[in-house]
Length: 304
Image (tube, rainbow, N blue to C red; front, side):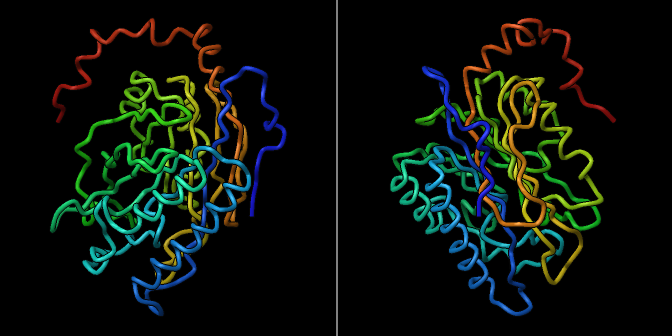
Protein backbone atom coordinates (compact mmCIF):
# COMPACT_ATOMS: atom_id res chain seq x y z
CA UNK A 1 0.00 0.00 0.00
CA UNK A 2 1.26 3.48 -0.69
CA UNK A 3 0.33 7.11 -0.47
CA UNK A 4 3.14 9.04 -2.08
CA UNK A 5 3.03 12.67 -3.06
CA UNK A 6 3.26 12.61 -6.84
CA UNK A 7 2.87 16.42 -7.06
CA UNK A 8 6.00 16.78 -4.94
CA UNK A 9 8.03 14.16 -6.78
CA UNK A 10 9.74 16.38 -9.36
CA UNK A 11 13.23 17.25 -8.18
CA UNK A 12 14.64 20.68 -8.92
CA UNK A 13 17.98 20.66 -10.68
CA UNK A 14 20.80 21.08 -8.18
CA UNK A 15 18.48 21.05 -5.16
CA UNK A 16 19.13 19.01 -2.02
CA UNK A 17 16.03 16.88 -2.37
CA UNK A 18 15.57 13.88 -0.09
CA UNK A 19 12.91 11.25 -0.61
CA UNK A 20 11.55 10.66 2.90
CA UNK A 21 8.99 8.19 4.13
CA UNK A 22 6.79 7.22 7.07
CA UNK A 23 5.17 3.89 7.91
CA UNK A 24 1.83 3.69 9.69
CA UNK A 25 0.41 0.27 10.49
CA UNK A 26 -2.20 -1.55 12.54
CA UNK A 27 -1.49 -4.31 15.05
CA UNK A 28 -4.08 -6.94 14.19
CA UNK A 29 -3.12 -9.57 16.76
CA UNK A 30 -4.37 -9.56 20.34
CA UNK A 31 -2.47 -10.89 23.38
CA UNK A 32 -5.72 -12.69 24.21
CA UNK A 33 -5.11 -15.04 21.29
CA UNK A 34 -1.40 -14.79 20.52
CA UNK A 35 1.80 -14.95 22.52
CA UNK A 36 3.76 -11.72 22.82
CA UNK A 37 6.63 -13.24 20.87
CA UNK A 38 4.24 -14.21 18.06
CA UNK A 39 2.77 -10.70 17.92
CA UNK A 40 6.26 -9.24 17.79
CA UNK A 41 7.31 -11.56 14.95
CA UNK A 42 4.17 -10.81 12.92
CA UNK A 43 4.57 -7.06 13.34
CA UNK A 44 8.23 -7.22 12.32
CA UNK A 45 7.31 -9.31 9.27
CA UNK A 46 4.61 -6.77 8.35
CA UNK A 47 7.08 -3.91 8.61
CA UNK A 48 9.73 -5.70 6.57
CA UNK A 49 7.20 -5.82 3.71
CA UNK A 50 6.36 -2.15 4.19
CA UNK A 51 10.08 -1.27 4.18
CA UNK A 52 10.37 -3.16 0.89
CA UNK A 53 7.46 -1.08 -0.43
CA UNK A 54 9.26 2.09 0.68
CA UNK A 55 12.35 0.91 -1.18
CA UNK A 56 10.28 0.45 -4.33
CA UNK A 57 9.15 4.04 -3.89
CA UNK A 58 12.85 5.02 -3.71
CA UNK A 59 12.58 6.32 -0.15
CA UNK A 60 15.98 7.35 1.22
CA UNK A 61 15.08 8.18 4.83
CA UNK A 62 12.32 6.16 6.53
CA UNK A 63 10.82 6.30 10.02
CA UNK A 64 8.68 3.59 11.64
CA UNK A 65 5.95 4.18 14.23
CA UNK A 66 6.41 4.27 18.00
CA UNK A 67 7.49 0.84 19.37
CA UNK A 68 6.65 -0.53 15.95
CA UNK A 69 6.77 -4.27 16.71
CA UNK A 70 3.69 -4.54 18.91
CA UNK A 71 0.51 -2.89 20.10
CA UNK A 72 0.48 0.25 22.21
CA UNK A 73 0.56 -1.80 25.41
CA UNK A 74 0.69 1.21 27.75
CA UNK A 75 -3.08 1.19 28.11
CA UNK A 76 -2.57 -1.53 30.74
CA UNK A 77 0.00 -1.95 33.49
CA UNK A 78 1.40 -5.46 33.25
CA UNK A 79 5.00 -6.59 33.66
CA UNK A 80 4.57 -9.17 30.89
CA UNK A 81 5.41 -6.47 28.34
CA UNK A 82 8.89 -6.09 29.82
CA UNK A 83 9.72 -9.33 28.01
CA UNK A 84 9.32 -7.59 24.63
CA UNK A 85 12.15 -5.13 25.33
CA UNK A 86 15.54 -5.54 23.64
CA UNK A 87 19.00 -4.07 23.71
CA UNK A 88 20.05 -1.83 20.86
CA UNK A 89 22.42 -4.64 19.88
CA UNK A 90 19.49 -7.07 19.81
CA UNK A 91 17.99 -9.03 16.90
CA UNK A 92 15.45 -6.42 15.76
CA UNK A 93 18.02 -3.67 15.23
CA UNK A 94 20.42 -6.16 13.64
CA UNK A 95 17.71 -7.04 11.11
CA UNK A 96 17.04 -3.36 10.44
CA UNK A 97 20.74 -2.70 9.92
CA UNK A 98 20.77 -5.35 7.19
CA UNK A 99 17.70 -3.82 5.54
CA UNK A 100 19.19 -0.31 5.72
CA UNK A 101 22.37 -1.50 4.01
CA UNK A 102 20.43 -3.57 1.44
CA UNK A 103 18.33 -0.60 0.35
CA UNK A 104 20.84 2.19 0.94
CA UNK A 105 18.19 3.69 3.23
CA UNK A 106 18.43 5.58 6.51
CA UNK A 107 16.08 3.94 9.03
CA UNK A 108 14.67 5.42 12.24
CA UNK A 109 13.55 2.42 14.28
CA UNK A 110 11.54 2.96 17.50
CA UNK A 111 11.93 0.04 19.92
CA UNK A 112 11.30 -0.84 23.56
CA UNK A 113 14.86 -0.70 24.87
CA UNK A 114 16.40 -2.42 27.88
CA UNK A 115 20.08 -1.42 28.17
CA UNK A 116 20.44 -3.43 31.38
CA UNK A 117 18.32 -5.73 33.52
CA UNK A 118 15.28 -3.91 34.92
CA UNK A 119 15.83 -0.64 33.04
CA UNK A 120 13.55 0.34 30.15
CA UNK A 121 13.30 3.23 27.70
CA UNK A 122 11.13 4.27 24.77
CA UNK A 123 13.90 4.58 22.20
CA UNK A 124 14.47 5.33 18.54
CA UNK A 125 17.58 3.87 16.89
CA UNK A 126 18.97 5.82 13.93
CA UNK A 127 20.67 3.63 11.34
CA UNK A 128 22.60 5.13 8.43
CA UNK A 129 22.27 3.94 4.84
CA UNK A 130 25.36 1.73 5.20
CA UNK A 131 23.84 -0.13 8.16
CA UNK A 132 25.84 1.69 10.82
CA UNK A 133 24.01 2.62 14.04
CA UNK A 134 24.59 6.36 14.39
CA UNK A 135 23.02 6.58 17.84
CA UNK A 136 19.77 6.61 19.76
CA UNK A 137 17.17 9.01 21.09
CA UNK A 138 15.32 8.15 24.30
CA UNK A 139 11.90 9.71 24.80
CA UNK A 140 12.27 12.49 27.36
CA UNK A 141 8.70 13.34 28.33
CA UNK A 142 6.83 10.37 29.79
CA UNK A 143 3.04 10.68 30.32
CA UNK A 144 1.06 8.86 32.97
CA UNK A 145 -2.58 9.80 32.61
CA UNK A 146 -6.01 8.43 31.72
CA UNK A 147 -7.64 7.07 29.63
CA UNK A 148 -4.75 4.65 29.16
CA UNK A 149 -1.36 6.25 28.79
CA UNK A 150 0.38 4.55 31.72
CA UNK A 151 3.89 5.06 30.37
CA UNK A 152 5.72 5.69 33.63
CA UNK A 153 5.06 2.03 34.45
CA UNK A 154 7.17 1.07 31.42
CA UNK A 155 9.72 3.80 30.64
CA UNK A 156 12.35 5.86 32.37
CA UNK A 157 12.68 9.44 31.11
CA UNK A 158 15.36 9.76 28.46
CA UNK A 159 18.92 10.62 29.45
CA UNK A 160 20.48 11.28 26.03
CA UNK A 161 19.35 14.87 25.52
CA UNK A 162 18.21 15.88 22.03
CA UNK A 163 20.77 14.53 19.56
CA UNK A 164 20.86 15.31 15.85
CA UNK A 165 22.32 12.67 13.55
CA UNK A 166 24.30 13.40 10.40
CA UNK A 167 23.05 10.75 7.98
CA UNK A 168 23.99 10.14 4.38
CA UNK A 169 21.01 12.20 3.24
CA UNK A 170 20.76 14.97 5.82
CA UNK A 171 20.60 15.87 9.49
CA UNK A 172 17.88 13.97 11.33
CA UNK A 173 16.33 14.51 14.76
CA UNK A 174 13.73 12.46 16.64
CA UNK A 175 10.99 13.55 19.04
CA UNK A 176 8.69 10.75 20.26
CA UNK A 177 4.90 11.09 20.72
CA UNK A 178 4.20 12.99 23.99
CA UNK A 179 7.41 14.97 23.44
CA UNK A 180 5.56 16.97 20.81
CA UNK A 181 3.57 18.82 23.49
CA UNK A 182 6.80 20.46 24.69
CA UNK A 183 8.35 23.12 22.42
CA UNK A 184 11.69 23.25 24.24
CA UNK A 185 13.22 20.05 22.88
CA UNK A 186 11.91 20.84 19.42
CA UNK A 187 13.81 24.14 19.56
CA UNK A 188 17.02 22.41 20.66
CA UNK A 189 16.79 20.11 17.64
CA UNK A 190 16.57 23.17 15.43
CA UNK A 191 19.50 24.87 17.12
CA UNK A 192 21.56 21.71 16.58
CA UNK A 193 20.88 21.83 12.87
CA UNK A 194 18.15 19.24 12.35
CA UNK A 195 16.71 19.35 8.83
CA UNK A 196 14.10 16.61 9.28
CA UNK A 197 12.52 15.82 12.66
CA UNK A 198 10.52 12.61 12.97
CA UNK A 199 7.80 12.21 15.58
CA UNK A 200 6.61 8.58 15.82
CA UNK A 201 3.44 8.55 17.91
CA UNK A 202 0.47 6.62 19.28
CA UNK A 203 -2.50 8.95 19.65
CA UNK A 204 -6.23 8.30 19.58
CA UNK A 205 -9.29 10.07 18.23
CA UNK A 206 -11.27 12.26 20.60
CA UNK A 207 -8.32 13.06 22.85
CA UNK A 208 -5.67 15.01 20.98
CA UNK A 209 -6.70 14.69 17.36
CA UNK A 210 -7.40 18.43 17.21
CA UNK A 211 -3.73 18.98 18.08
CA UNK A 212 -2.41 16.46 15.56
CA UNK A 213 -2.22 18.90 12.65
CA UNK A 214 -1.53 21.92 14.83
CA UNK A 215 1.43 21.30 17.14
CA UNK A 216 3.91 19.74 14.75
CA UNK A 217 3.43 22.25 11.94
CA UNK A 218 3.94 24.87 14.66
CA UNK A 219 7.28 23.23 15.55
CA UNK A 220 8.18 23.21 11.85
CA UNK A 221 7.43 26.94 11.56
CA UNK A 222 9.11 27.98 14.82
CA UNK A 223 12.27 26.01 14.06
CA UNK A 224 12.20 26.08 10.27
CA UNK A 225 12.71 22.42 9.47
CA UNK A 226 10.67 19.55 8.00
CA UNK A 227 8.58 17.38 10.32
CA UNK A 228 7.43 13.82 9.69
CA UNK A 229 4.61 12.85 12.07
CA UNK A 230 3.52 9.21 12.37
CA UNK A 231 0.44 7.69 14.02
CA UNK A 232 -0.52 4.04 14.10
CA UNK A 233 -3.83 2.69 12.79
CA UNK A 234 -7.01 1.06 14.11
CA UNK A 235 -8.51 -0.34 17.31
CA UNK A 236 -6.12 -2.54 19.26
CA UNK A 237 -7.52 -5.51 21.16
CA UNK A 238 -8.31 -6.32 23.88
CA UNK A 239 -8.28 -2.75 25.18
CA UNK A 240 -10.09 -0.77 22.48
CA UNK A 241 -9.51 2.37 24.52
CA UNK A 242 -9.39 4.52 21.41
CA UNK A 243 -8.97 4.57 17.64
CA UNK A 244 -5.50 5.20 16.32
CA UNK A 245 -6.40 7.32 13.34
CA UNK A 246 -3.31 7.26 11.12
CA UNK A 247 -3.10 10.43 9.02
CA UNK A 248 0.67 10.46 9.19
CA UNK A 249 2.12 13.43 7.34
CA UNK A 250 5.05 15.58 6.32
CA UNK A 251 5.02 19.36 6.69
CA UNK A 252 7.57 21.86 5.45
CA UNK A 253 9.41 24.73 7.22
CA UNK A 254 6.46 27.00 6.52
CA UNK A 255 4.14 24.59 8.33
CA UNK A 256 2.38 23.56 5.15
CA UNK A 257 1.24 19.95 4.73
CA UNK A 258 3.09 18.25 1.89
CA UNK A 259 1.35 14.88 2.07
CA UNK A 260 -1.12 13.26 4.50
CA UNK A 261 -1.69 9.53 4.85
CA UNK A 262 -5.02 7.71 5.07
CA UNK A 263 -6.99 7.39 8.27
CA UNK A 264 -7.56 3.65 8.58
CA UNK A 265 -5.03 1.90 6.33
CA UNK A 266 -1.52 0.58 6.59
CA UNK A 267 0.54 2.84 4.37
CA UNK A 268 3.91 4.12 3.26
CA UNK A 269 3.67 7.90 3.10
CA UNK A 270 6.44 9.34 0.93
CA UNK A 271 7.41 12.85 -0.13
CA UNK A 272 10.36 14.66 -1.68
CA UNK A 273 11.73 17.20 0.79
CA UNK A 274 13.76 20.08 -0.69
CA UNK A 275 16.21 20.78 2.14
CA UNK A 276 17.26 24.01 0.44
CA UNK A 277 13.84 25.36 1.41
CA UNK A 278 15.11 25.63 5.00
CA UNK A 279 17.58 28.34 4.02
CA UNK A 280 14.97 30.08 1.86
CA UNK A 281 12.63 30.34 4.85
CA UNK A 282 15.37 31.43 7.27
CA UNK A 283 16.39 34.26 4.95
CA UNK A 284 12.92 35.70 5.51
CA UNK A 285 12.08 34.75 9.10
CA UNK A 286 15.17 35.37 11.25
CA UNK A 287 13.95 33.50 14.33
CA UNK A 288 17.36 32.12 15.26
CA UNK A 289 19.05 35.50 14.84
CA UNK A 290 16.45 37.25 16.97
CA UNK A 291 16.35 34.80 19.86
CA UNK A 292 16.99 36.25 23.33
CA UNK A 293 18.23 33.30 25.40
CA UNK A 294 19.52 35.62 28.13
CA UNK A 295 15.87 36.51 28.84
CA UNK A 296 14.68 32.90 29.13
CA UNK A 297 16.22 32.00 32.51
CA UNK A 298 12.80 31.54 34.09
CA UNK A 299 12.27 28.52 31.84
CA UNK A 300 14.78 26.50 33.84
CA UNK A 301 13.90 27.80 37.30
CA UNK A 302 11.89 25.51 39.60
CA UNK A 303 8.14 26.18 39.72
CA UNK A 304 5.54 24.98 42.23
